[in-house]
Image 1 (tube, rainbow, N blue to C red):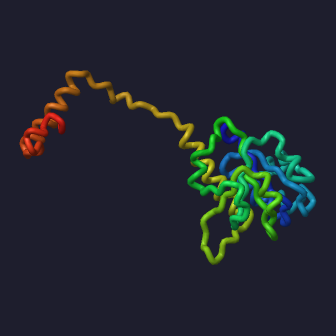
Image 2: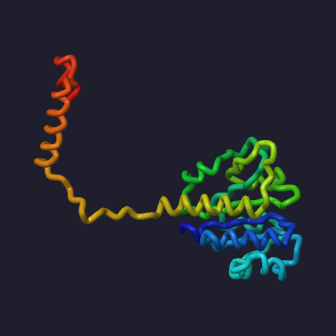
Image 3: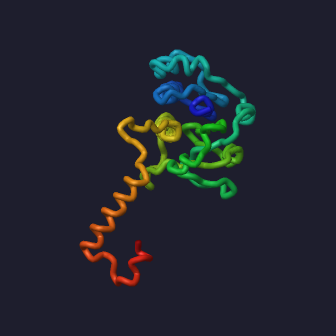
Length: 207
């Protein structure tokens, strides 16, 4: 599934510029799916399209829902972003923990709150995890599009690492048993020269 199974959900976004910038960030890392829940501006509008720059296709393909529940039909895992940890019943994860998420088989949605108030406890209750982006402890609030682009870049890197195939060099060949034993004997000989095996009675165990 990979990148086709990643969704970015903006809950009640308030500014056209942020919606456009989020669409641009989504396309920057080759994701495609943008959901909006009850956006305040008319969607789409000229300001959104202008701010999205080359990501107008993301805007045109985006889906708008009246409420959060309607948007979650096919989602397997929801990760809510929040500057504060509030719901103790939901596991909190870090950006590094995204490496443990199964992006290959699961449909994953990242949920972002409105610019003014973020996500309520009720909205977070739909999530499997909450994710906090590490910031200055005295100034935790991030712009909506900045939060999204950090997560998009992190997820893109995780997926790339997990799917990149290993290409064996043509110059490398499997060593024969004889070659391996010769290497072992060379190592043992060098260790003997520096009196590594001490005391002598422990030599067999050390070997």
